[in-house]
Length: 133
Image 1: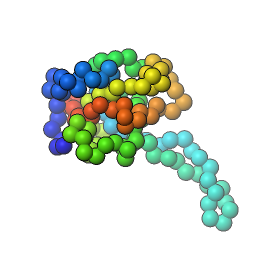
Image 2: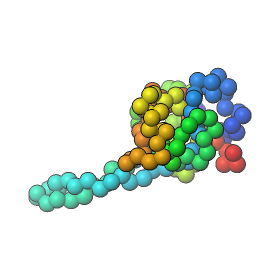
Image 3: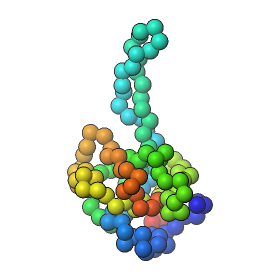
């Protein structure tokens, strides 16, 4: 799928009907919490795990209070025409989600210890978005 940027009204209607949650998000990568690890020679060191997700700019449909939704980009389906494979950092995307029950509970909270990870089965579509929306 190419990087043709869409307005909200250009997102296919049948996908909007499938997704109870539709958000405009800015894709970003960020460091997780520090973890102690044992280095060569027995010394203790620190590592930071990299996470990827969408900063929620605006919720167009559904109840979502979290400021950030985390995804695993490498587990997204490869041959889906509705899921953009070439996600670029700091670009805006339409994220259409059909959340499971536990994901919906996490969305209704304003704060969690880490951004909530949405599974690939819950993602209906990801489309590049115009910044003006």
